[in-house]
Amino acid sequence: MVNTFVVSGSSSALIVAGALLIGYTARTFPYGINRYLSKAASLGYALPGAVIAVGIVIIFTTFDKWAERYCGFDSTVMNGTIIVLVFGYVARFSAVAISTVDGSFERLGLSLNKASRSLGYTHGQTLRRIEIPLMRRSLIFAFALVFVDTIKELPLTLILRPFNYETLSTKTYEMAESQMVYEASIYALSIVLISLIPITLTILKSEH
Image (cartoon, rainbow, N blue to C red):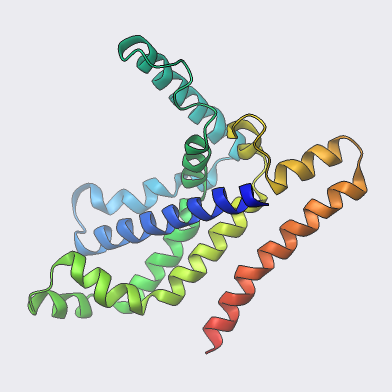
């Protein structure tokens, strides 16, 4: 359970932060490559988790070989680490947060941003002091959605996880594969209960 919270929580925070940065950049500077940032970052959600995992393994295996040859590092610098698993979650579930954050930016409009900029605020100050507080509920909701998706993601986790690094989804699969139905149900119900917590808190928060 601790492993699940660590990897899912850190991945969700990175994804929401990345979605916020991409959304702000694409809206404030809508020209050149910036117009396609959201679409490019959302491509991973259309692909199966196993396909993304295999692609990431190839990328990081190539990096490890390069690091071993030219830098003298061990042959497993990145592969088999939590960093690779978090990277896989970011590539897979960024679209979930991006759609929520983009919708929140659209509701805010550009007039508030322009007014802040005309008063001498920088882009960073405008985002941090004005827009993020107004988008707080949307950001919490985006975090909750991504958190739930990462908790139940199985193929990508099985392929990219470190050796002997178990999460609730991998333990559920392992027990079910061994025909240990009663033991598997404990982990499966834990996934359901944990997933209900952020969703319930988000709903209650939105009602106030």
